[in-house]
Length: 323
Ligand SMILES: Nc1ncnc2c1ncn2[C@@H]1O[C@H](COP(=O)(O)OP(=O)(O)OP(=O)(O)O)[C@@H](O)[C@H]1O
Image (cartoon, rainbow, N blue to C red; front, side, top):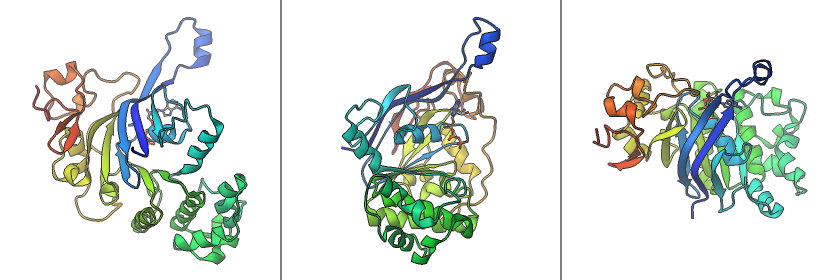
């Protein structure tokens, strides 16, 4: 059984303006579908990367996986338990303690008034656990020193702060860490160091990662499997080798063209061409068709499902040879 199983996950936001609805009666409600019918599994001790442009639904999926946001439809099970419907408090607590999240901005996610020791130990202390020496041990494991435990967050650089966030995430011995753009706020030179650290810790602690990024080249070396999201839907899923060697979906091809193809991490990436459509009023058929250089008539009429093509699963009529 996979550690994480995501089935037909959908999240719709009501984006009507309540004050306007009060003024103008019977104004139709407006809904934004941020995530639509997304399914994938993450086997234990592997890294699944979700990649897509801003607004493609990556963070919304991350929040549903950690239980911060309930799905509108479909669900997420972790070790077979669905946090949105489970009623047994012990089971909910055991799943919650297995999951941690690391956010993009290490500046915002550390309490500036707390010493690093208290920040790292907090998840353990909050559960009534023993934390003596824990912060010092974890700081050394993330490449800082035990004496850093007495300092405050402002005494560290951005990369060091993200290391503190990693140490805090490890404190409760999680099985799954959801990493939402963990390096994109960092200097290019520091990004690779933090990514390498996260890879090493994964092996050392047997971690499973859901890794969210807008940059395919960042996840190329970390991921066991990559899912490409476009306007809330998975459009391609493959291993990094298959995706980089033979991308099937025109959107994946566009993302790869926008990214420099050299080895390494974190270089400046040009945005892909064309405008992202309005998610409140998405295009018919395949939502990518207005930007797609290969689109045919069928693409605007019918939405393709994910099907296996070569070593990928891809949702594209042209790639599937079914035009
Ligand atoms: N609470 C909310 N209420 C209304 N709309 C939301 C809410 N949260 C997200 N959205 C919308 O859902 C869509 C997906 O957002 P999400 O943040 O998941 O995308 P993302 O791929 O993580 O983008 P980014 O890289 O910019 O964070 C966007 O159109 C966003 O505006």
